Amino acid sequence: MARIVVVGAGFAGHTAALYLGSKLGKSHEVTVVSNRDVFGYVPSWVWVGVGHIKPEQTIFKLKPVYDRMNIKFVHAAVKEVHPDAGDQYIMGEVVGSGQRVRVDYDYLVMAPGPKLNFEGTPGLGPDKGFTQSICSLPHAEKTRDTYLAAVERMKKGEKLKFVIGTGHPGATCQGAAFEYLINVHKDLIKKGVRDRAELLWLSNEASVGDFGVRGVQVKKDGALLDSHEFIEAVFKDYGIKWQVQTGVTKVEEGKIYWENYEGEQGTTDFDFSMLIPQFKGQPMKYVGKEGEDVSSKVVNAAGFVLVDGTYGLSYGDLKNNPDAWPSTYQNPNYKNIFAAGIAFAPPGPISVPFTNKNGLSISAAPPRTGMVSGIIGRVVALNIVDLITKGHMTHSERMSEMVAACIASMGDSLWDGSAVTIVMHPVVPDLKKFPTGSGRDLFVNHMEMGVAGAWMKFMLHYTFIWKFKALPGWQIIPE
Image 1: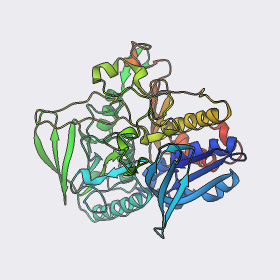
Image 2: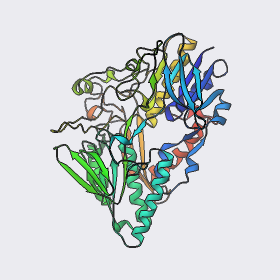
Image 3: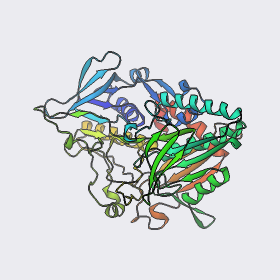
Image 4: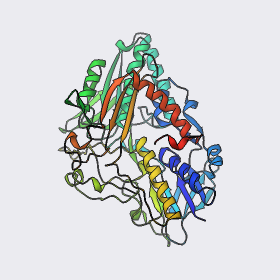
């Protein structure tokens, strides 16, 4: 009997667990260890952050789902991984009691999600800083309360400045921040106070619409349209100002300090700010057979798990080598350890990195959340099934092969709402296969804005919660 342990129950970990449970759970032991006992549908936390949906509509308890799927559940935070052969296990602390718990494994899936590195930018974040976040449900709730308080101030006649974007020179998830920004815009219109708000997009992107994926090109009426032009037009239409090529370095009450590509340093005042932090790997100890530190064999300096990618390439070499991106997400030193979602170490950035004359790197990290996480979770799970049942792996999918879709809603109304819909293939451009279209397939790439996107976003919320609850037909719904 094989013992498979999945660390984390987000998009990647939960997806992997469902596939493992459905295919192996009756004859092998599948265990999920997570510091949260609920699954959270992260894309809808944007709506929580403006008060458009109740928090409880975005979560559900994990254990009842796992009980049906022949999966054990341990509600604990993993602190140590002991990967050496003959005695492979993880150590965790049970949430609530702090009691130490040991779980042995034959195969390990690392999918704990990111550490939100608020401390990487002094003064950032809702707990010890001066900005808001939608990266966790408690943060989204606090953001909602702070935002609604700002709206009340505007209703009394005050004019306020909102700054939304990224809060670190190396942050990712620009798409989530963009979606929150346009939801705020729409909500302020509905509340009748948009004329009293100044909205500013502040981002480390190389250009508006880059989104950490080097932008997207589509063919419209025989002409090429890129996401830079598209999103810039949206901002102009909505009266949203923007400042890109900028890394936030510090935040004080009502004041953001930044540095840009030119090496200029400046400040931006704000009354309300939601800034996405840098993501890092979850802090864990990796302990060898003699108690030695073996972390260098498992993770990189940022704490992300090393997999079957090609590391150490210059950006120029990486840009021209789509096969440098991992395909099976298997650790090269411990063949029974896999990583999924944000937990795996990418071989480098997708967007063009930049270091200014002061030595500050202002470079968007590659996004590895949402749809990408789910796809990788499935690939990892099916490969573990292969190894147990066949002795070899048969599944692979690089980010330079994946199709990904992003729907950024503007409000949750099905009647006067809207959404920006972007489809790209592949996520990481392949200049060899698609020399035109900036390395992507212009036949598949798509970009539009309209009420149809709002309907799609609404349906995705309920469709994916159905899938993640493993209700009938869940495997038919694509990741």
